[in-house]
Length: 278
Image (cartoon, rainbow, N blue to C red; front, side, top):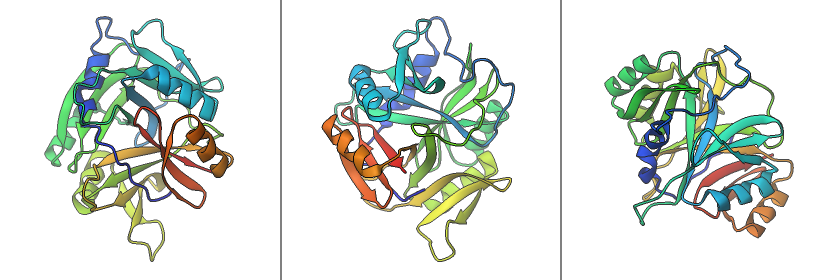
């Protein structure tokens, strides 16, 4: 859990989820196979990478984290990311028509109890509904929204249950930070959307807060009012040795954005920012 920024503008990705979800087969692979029938409401359960160049992205992440990335034969232009035998995310090919925007972006998926109700709540709380809700065979009911500061977020009620919780292993998702220029309205938004309570990580630290739900910490929030910083959700991957991972990322064509202590943010060769932490 650290304070970071991402320097990319991912607004071109707004409509991609709908484009993928609305494929002719109207199918996306389930997040849990076999089904768990358990819903971890309020938890971030999946991340999808939207990319113009999935081949380059796949090569980078497979060599950096040891992920296995396999094309899904049931869905065109969609691959599943495996850490060991566990699916943890996806990669979607997307043609970027805006040359001014980043080529890739990670989108966080939030588990909700009722997508339709969550969409109504998001709209009433000042957010925007960008797509949905729609039913997607295999995956569940889904919507794409923006919070009051413009951070995009996927809302999902899985058809067969969410991936089971486990202690993060090397290569697993470790954490998620909301980077935002407007803390107070965003805090109110997520309190209504997900029943999150915002608390400072430390009593004397006003710069970094954590979102809690039913006493359980779910994510972090960094308020940055810097020009050019877009609101976004930034995922982190657990690694063994931070300096070794940074060196390897650079060798593979990635870029170090910022490092502090045992954590860092890097940008992959296709333009997507991602956090790493021991």
